[in-house]
Amino acid sequence: MLEADVLKHATTVLSKQQREQFFEDGYLVAEDMIDDAWVTRLRGAMDDMIEQSRSVTESDASFVLEEGHSPDDPRLRRLSSPVSHHPTFWEFAAQSKAADAAIDLCGPDVKFHHSKLNFKWPKGGQLFDWHQDIQAWPHTDYSPITVGIYLNDCDIEQGPLLAIKGSHKEPLRSMYDKDGKWVLRIDQEDMPENWEQNTAALTGRAGSLVILNCRVIHGSKRNASGQMRPLLLNVYSSADSMPYTFNPIPSDYAGAIVRGQTARTACHDPRGCELPPDWSKGYVGPWKHQATGKESAQTM
Ligand SMILES: O=C(O)CCC(=O)C(=O)O
Image (tube, rainbow, N blue to C red; front, side):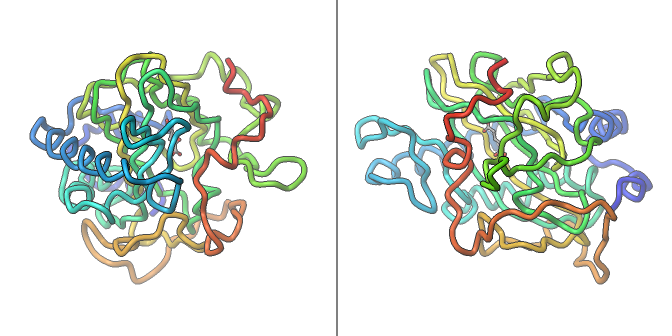
């Protein structure tokens, strides 16, 4: 669904002003949207998964490990598709205010695409280079959003999401380097004008929703603090927005309608989208692609 049509519907859990802010800036932090009971349940599910990761010795399709990970000292970078691993994560994706917030930004009919639980371990947690998401999972329109929730308080030292205000309105950048290699990263020379002044740190208390437009340029720095930064990310779109490449993080829930009705007609945005590599041949997660040793704009 296109923005103009979304705006014809009343908001449900976000204020009108929050919705306008999202469409203007390309991101939104909605503080304290998720109550303590949910946060406690999600932390419990996360702890179960960290326990399971102790026996994992190499990164695989579920667990992306940070260097130094061991049974005694688990250090995860990502749990891919948490909804596939613990029922609490799917219950949250389908039944919480995260899905309600998606109604306000995608329209009344909302479809689930994929999920991930990104960690930044204390005094570590690799940075995430500047990038845009939609080139990794193109859809027929630009309605997809990522609805994140911090499971711990996240201040500037924990490596919060950083986003460039208004960058979702710019032409998409290429996620390939000059040699045609997929790097999911934007070099300094391709960053928007005045990006440093327009960089927002999306900090928030545990239970805050942090929502990204699929075109907005974003990234994050290392975690300089002694506190872990777990960030649960669920990707939704309007029901009439159709993915046309292989889902990099597939699950039994991909394509599930979490609010409203299935679409009968696809929505097409005339602005085309760069295609990613063929993920049906495997998806290794973003860090492997970004780790080229080349300096990016993230070194601000
Ligand atoms: O976890 C982070 O800090 C960044 C996540 C992100 O940008 C992504 O998954 O696309």
